[in-house]
Amino acid sequence: MTPVVLIAEELAPAAIDVLAYDFDVRHVDGTDRPALLTALADADAVIVRSATRVDAEAVAAAPRLKVVARAGVGLDNVDVNAATARGVMVVNAPTSNIVSAAEQAIALLLAVARHTADASAALKRGEWKRARYTGVEVQGKTVGVVGLGRIGVLFAQRMAAFGTRLIAYDPYIQPARAAQLGVRLVGLDELLRESDFISIHLPRTPETLGLIGEKELATVKPGVRIINAARGGLVDERALAEALAEGRVAGAGLDVFVTEPTTESPLFAFDTVVATPHLGASTVEAQDKAGLSVARSVKLALQGEFVPDA
Ligand code: NAD
Ligand code: MLT
Image (cartoon, rainbow, N blue to C red; front, side, top):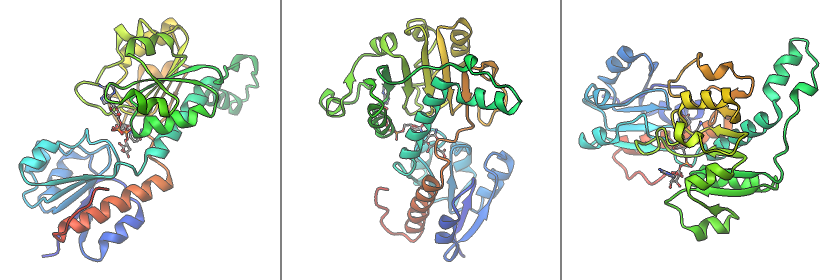
């Protein structure tokens, strides 16, 4: 019987081409839980992005499953322990979209600094209001990077070209490595106190969820602007809304939300918030790289061959 590869979210056409010759490629909407569980019954492999939950229930619903492929970086929507316990391999594409994600964080930072989204929307409504949209320069400002991993480093390297002073909080990084990048490692308290802009580049784990909450937002430099293009919930949404309402936080650029998809959030009420629907990896280049990388891994895994690190 031809192995079944179940594609649960949008995947680059080139990636589907890699699989179509050897496998029975099927599609399902991974956010439609009953449809997903039914389709998993026949699946030898499932390919997801961030919207499909591959938890213990999903693994149990897939008796033939040999590989779960995440076409992207974060594995927080995959229960790796449940898969491993069943002998199911989990693969991802850890470098596929890191440039795109870093560029998205920078796009949000600049848009927040210059009110780009709101000014554009106002002009298209027929309002030519220059004074209302006076922004701030980035040059000379202190930028705090929370999480100096692959994306945090790319973000910091690019922000250095803007003439910013870079500090970072990441207890797992050696100070010498940060120094090579021109970044000073500091504690979270100091980063919150000193940063004019804060950009979050953490995975979502039990440790990082709510890392920037009410207590932390009470200690920020007044007028800070916060960017989160990593995962919803790393910055507590309710506490952020309160800090924006009080003016302690002057603006926020948000690509990710606690609940996704979402079209409603108290944060959307603020003119000073630029919000995008989890577009960090949504570039042609990143989708090609992520799709091709996991398609090749799935093919090797189902053919019983060694799957090298992506
Ligand atoms: P990475 O693993 O290379 O870097 C994460 C960094 O966070 C590491 O350096 C690690 O030491 C640090 N870290 C972990 N726990 C920490 C903690 N408690 N406190 C401080 N630092 C901590 O990952 P990456 O490739 O840079 O990606 C980061 C995250 O970005 C991903 O896990 C994913 O959730 C998110 N992401 C989002 C998009 C998007 O579309 N918006 C795209 C790609 C990735
Ligand atoms: C990721 O972790 O790779 C991103 O969130 C992008 C995505 O889910 O497509």
